[in-house]
Length: 178
Image (cartoon, rainbow, N blue to C red; front, side):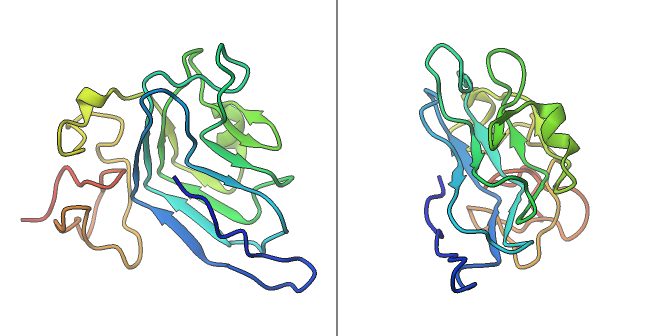
């Protein structure tokens, strides 16, 4: 769960830029948390890269649902010009659609229509699909979803990620290089 890096101040046109949030596995058993909320200031284009993340929340209900939970990602800007989202595996909410927020909740189709999103999928996973080591099972929503990211070579356990081809979305690689 990412909180912080507010740091961009319009008045001075200075602050935190070039933030990458990649290859994380988020576990949320009761739909009480979100991956990130970003607000304040107007960061320049390309400030945030969010890629290859896996969010597992089997009971996920988006804002407006029975318990009125926060969206998984909440962006409090008019658009996604400061962001690049790619190859993330997000859960569907219990109503059957994904909920991410850019000045209000968006459906999966609305999210996919942004030019700053590419290859995100919306398919819920259960905790049993992760196992004790948080390794997604073959054929799960995370399997083959990710792509290589500059500067990332290993997974959470230090196993080498493939140099070419698809990666596993999340922190643990299903098919590490032997």
